[in-house]
Image (tube, rainbow, N blue to C red; front, top):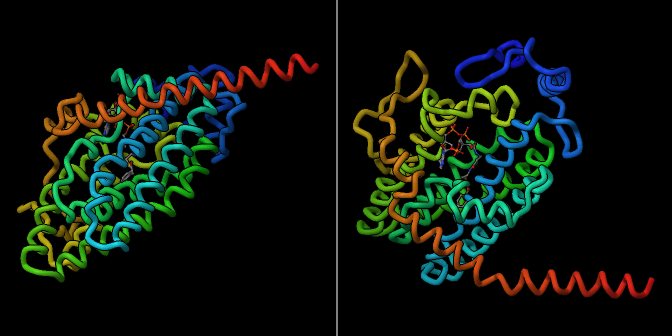
Amino acid sequence: MYAQMVKSTGKGLVAREDMSFEDRAFQDRIDAGEKIEPKDYMPDGYRRNLIRQIGQHAHSEIVGQLPEGNWITRAPTLERKANLLAKVQDEAGHGLYLYCAAETLGVSRDEMTEMLLDGRMKYSSIFNYPTLTWADMGAVGWLVDGAAIMNQVPLQRTSYGPYARAMVRICKEESFHQRQGFHIMMAMVNGTADQKRMAQDALNRFWYPALMMFGPSDKDSVHSAQSMAWRIKMNTNDELRQKFVDETVPQAEYLGLTIPDDDLQWNEDTGHYDFTEPDWAEFFEVISGNGPCNVDRLNARQKAWDDGAWVREAMVAHAEKKAARKQAAE
Ligand code: FAQ
């Protein structure tokens, strides 16, 4: 039971005996595995933390369309094009479910977009890396969607009802995405020597960025302790990263590809693979806005926001006209 572990620590967790009556009752509901719904009581910190995580997740789905959107017009066959188009469309849908889930907490989609554009909100570091060849579509589906599934399957059991329910459909679709990525990799490794080299090169470039998707190592994670106490997060960053490595290494072996880590090896004692951690200095640079594609990604979002201004204005004008007509008729 997390409530027993909730101590006043440097990470800002409040001891059970120091909680207000409402917060203690809230924690009891969480510990009993109940879902929290939008109109239920929730501590301000719970609301803020959820808006942060769900908003960041929604932005990631939307920004995450850009690296793959880049390849829709250059897919090698009609079937690949149709699959990629469907996948990118799915990501748009995921963003919309997640924005809706965040809106139930009292923040509007416009506010979240403004926070993304002025740097108060983040999106996943992975989408700041370029997609240079068609093999990257395989690597993104296999590794990026694979990491997303690893992270998101437990979130189907998260404590906030609208978030948990959104994750059910998202996870089903992400599984299809992961398969289509692996299928592209299979075709490439069974193709010409050049195609196999392209697949290896894509794995080399996406391996460590995929490991970074799980967030900083546990000792540097600022939100994990509280988020886990509130069951906003179900596992630590390192637990999920390890699980991802353990499941992905045999898949790479099946493809005949080499994970770019000389120290990767099976550890009989732990029952897990030992692996080299990503370069955390690079991770913090990327999430601070200094990755290879941060400027391009945010410019694309800014342009979409500016180009869509007339649509937002027209919709508001239409709603006002309708309301005025209704009022006049009454
Ligand atoms: N990128 O204290 P923690 C997808 C930030 S999947 C950027 O450990 P937390 C599918 C973190 O926000 C990708 N920033 O944070 C797809 C915090 O900064 P803040 C999206 C990161 O929240 C596939 C600071 O570092 N998935 O889009 C990253 O407990 C293909 C300290 O970190 C989700 O968002 C990062 N990788 O744990 C779409 C899943 N990691 O906010 C298209 C839900 C950490 O205080 C194509 N989110 N930071 O300024 C989560 O599970 C968590 O939020 C973590 C981070 C695990 C990402």
